[in-house]
Image 1 (cartoon, rainbow over the protein chains, first blue to last red):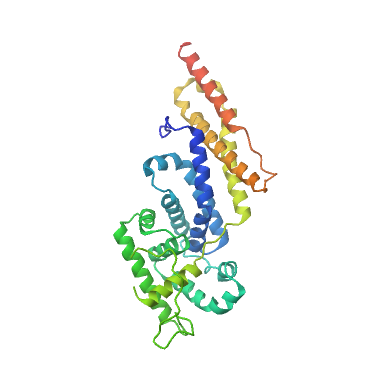
Image 2 (tube, rainbow over the protein chains, first blue to last red; image 1 turned 30 degrees about the horizontal axis):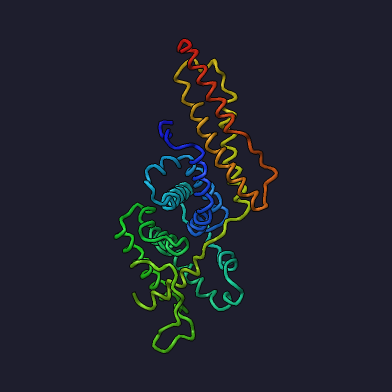
Amino acid sequence: MSDQDPHKPKRELDREFSELYRSHLRDVYSYAYYRVGDHHDAEDLTEQTFLQAYRHFERAQRESRGRPLRPWLIRIAHNLAANLYRDRSRKPASPIDETTSIAALHTTEQLVEGRDELSRVLDGVRMLPDDRREALIMRFALGMDNREIARALGRSEGATKVLIHRAIKQLEELIGERPGAQTRPEHSSANGAGPGVPEGARSDD
Amino acid sequence: MTEAATYLEGLLREALAPVEPPEDLVERLEGALTSITEMAADELEAWELSAMRDPRNWVRPAAAVLAGGAAGGALVLLRARRRAHGSAVQSVRWPDVPRSAERAVRELEREARRLLGGR
């Protein structure tokens, strides 16, 4: 009760919470899905995240001092996911549902060409230590920059940059170690240079 | 950064493409927030003013007022958005919580004045 800011109209807070929900529902769900590995748990985690966010929204807003609240939301989801695993004393019950995640998001043509490769990448991501895996999910599924990831994980920006660098390096090694692994398309040139992939929200490292 | 790493990052972006939340989750989530609202309102309604003579009991209903009011307002906005998208959820009941909250606050104020001797 003492957290209530007498200077901020409740209606304004409500509007801002609605904005937060609308803007980041997909982010939270995507994070939850890749983090826990199945849709049912991802739904529960998303629901719990927003309920908890609602309870602490005003304080978080005050303490954020105008900074984006997405890292705070993802941190809630991160903590809840950790609790879920602790309670169940296990890793994700089932591998990320590749059929759903890939099939839902790529055309048939892309599936034929890239399914094996994408499956290997997902397998590799699953094998990473938790913190590295989470950093990659935040970077590539949510498009978060180093600063946001650092806030979500409670680390410095420098440490986050190193974390992501090591995650990618380890993933590269994991994929390379696997039988039949190939991190480049078959039509790559002899010197190993692939056609590349369009650059998107690339990290700042 | 090596070319292989650049290529791998491209693959990561594809493999970890954002996932749209299912529609039933959206409905369930909004329903859950509504439940919180209703719980807060019910708590206020059930609260007997006689129990309010002890100031130590004031905190809980006052917190319920705040919780109910905030959730209600937020959900009204969410509902407006869903209606705008033509996907209204008929089964969800939307209580007039802000009004209930205001009423409860006024009740508390009156009771406090009474207990403090009409000041």
